[in-house]
Image (cartoon, rainbow, N blue to C red; front, side, top):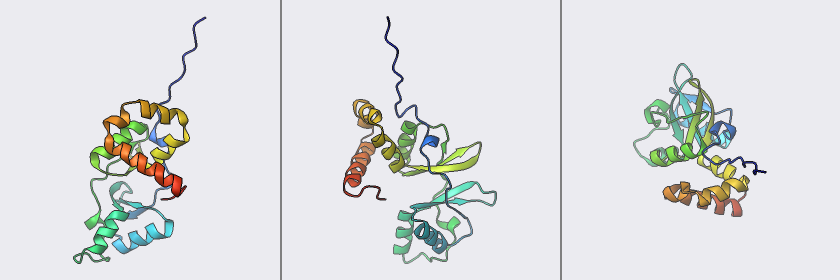
Length: 174
């Protein structure tokens, strides 16, 4: 009697929509840097997606951007988000695989991808979200280590290692 085929669930078959965070915090292009920073602080988040007048993602501002801006004598916290946001915003389709999301993040040197479906933003996924999903699923951990996925993408492997160590010392930390 032939053995039943085992279903393989690797990071190339899991969509980002299955692990994304819903209810993304957004700000309008005409809000100030101060308002965006206050939103990040109030909600304990690391980024705010900037939206245009139609509510579509037009850029993103991250904690790192805020630190860089505050450190610059040329920047006023009263400046508008649209003048400092990173654009164009790189997004992920809801069905993009975790593998493709990690590769996109690595190629673009970013850590967050707003998730869109039919042109509408439905969530956001971060590299940490993907790393958490991998760590929670032993089959993914073993497949990723034996796979060439992270071996080919050394920076991603290094971020995963850093994340794993941080989880050991500060479980659930940012």
